[in-house]
Length: 497
Image 1 (spheres, helix red, strand yellow):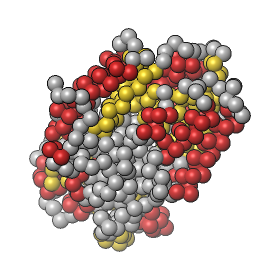
Image 2 (cartoon, one colour; image 1 turned 60 degrees about the horizontal axis):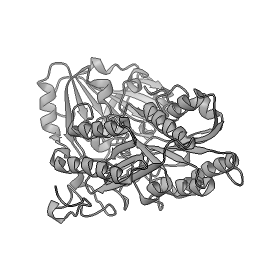
Image 3 (tube, helix red, strand yellow; image 1 turned 120 degrees about the vertical axis):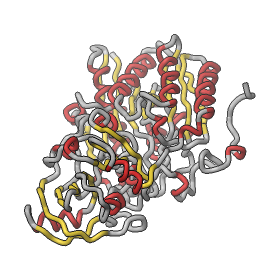
């Protein structure tokens, strides 16, 4: 019988977002609550439980799982408390000498940052390594994770997502759990190579179903399915988590063959570097995007990646809304905004009320200025809904506001704006509009490609802009593509082919 611990901590940080993420933004499950809340969802923890619970020779030891939507840096004292709670839950299961635990699977996002701690996952994993000694540890990561020396040193295997947009969360948890079982049973001896790649990447070539990045990921899948291949991934980092280790990485783990791990990592890194110019986002000015929508039959989706709440932005940008004001565009528009004060006024006024309302610029005023509008309150709700992958969203109170042909879904707190359930829960069907503005770089595609006639990435300001040159980087690896001239970048490859 193998006794395997499972835990998780997930949040994606944009350090350019001035709004700190607080502890009350996290959902926390302790012990057996993890099974009740996450079993059956499209999450990494659910995938780990799938594998462990299907094996009658495994006893699952659920510790603690905490997760939050993306946002600004985590308030340091709150981060310390969360980390301490997770570690205490591990200590309670491990005991004084870890004799009763045979291994651990930890689900991280990997791009969390605190006010002062740039590598929370590395800190926590290092403490767990001290508790478990030489017992195997597998970790799963979002492919936007920041890979640090501590992560590589303290984990026996790192298993990143293989899809973008992300659809394989549960599958990644299953991959990690299966490998942990093999390590715990002594069937394999992992040898990991990590090859840093000084590049920050955005754009449609990252779509794994169609882009060049998908070819690199297919190389990783082939390694994992080959004899002796255990884990492989290209971890492109979150370009908005401006910390000292921010860059891309290739990570490969084989069964006892460090030379092969290094060779495979370098092969994939060379591929990524060869096509680096393709991994720069193509953006369209807002005026041109509106013209495109006007000439399109059917739904046009605007990707407002600059204010992507799924990437850590504040969600209070009104840039696209302002762009439609005063234009000749006569189609219907659906968009979202985070504005707690506006929601409060709408709830106080009631459904049907007409009032002058200030919208936007409440969270990131350095980038977004409020706009005063005459609106009508269409509907009000408590905001409760469930994401497509099965977890509960926490937008706070919600108001649907109308301005001529524009519908504005205002929430008290940021939530991911990728799927349709946010809108459907408030009586809005995106398929019935001419334009839907989604604050997401590409995660929405899974839910909208089948109903959209056009998808346009708009160039507007924001703390998660795909125009990386517009962001005030201070800490990431330098020189780095595309921020610096290529001739200044030194690669860690062996001799050129």
